[in-house]
Length: 214
Image (tube, rainbow, N blue to C red; front, side, top):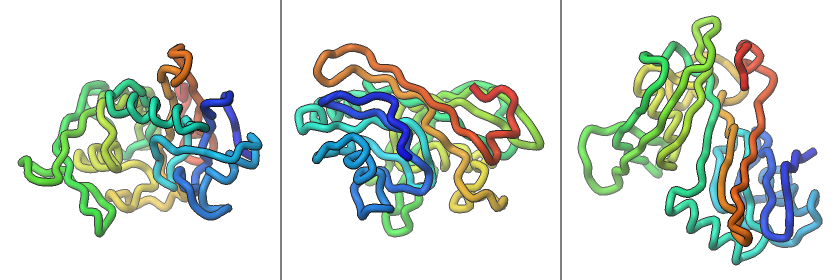
């Protein structure tokens, strides 16, 4: 069953389940048909994305006008995203910022930290805060300043702190999902301009290791 945090004629804010595509696809593979069925709408417009293996809060436009407004807000960095991640090791210092140059290899669908600018390289920046530690793992809250492909996963992995379950970026554990969750989404409503703020928490699996999950 799909968890709907908010909906009106313009937008829907949902908690995307792990294992579903965030963009359109066949029924059973994408969350979009599930949104249509749950809300009884015919059109759903994805304006941002989460990897299939990642769950959490997402906003979808239900009209072309709302899609254009939200896409513009994202391009202007006016949609704030906060994530929770469980990483191997411990960030030092416990809070700070990471800034890197990232290059995405489209054939491998994998991003890399590189040392110089060239075609296809983009700057990536985030802020982090360590909330808890347990059994050699750390619970980290992350605020994205940019939205690059696999940004959180590669920036932490490049510092020898891969996300739990993220074998693509160096984790050697056998978790069933990547320990990354879209925790908070803040944006202006595409019609009224009112500030919208939504949050959700992950549960089960490695998340149960942490006391200070909030």
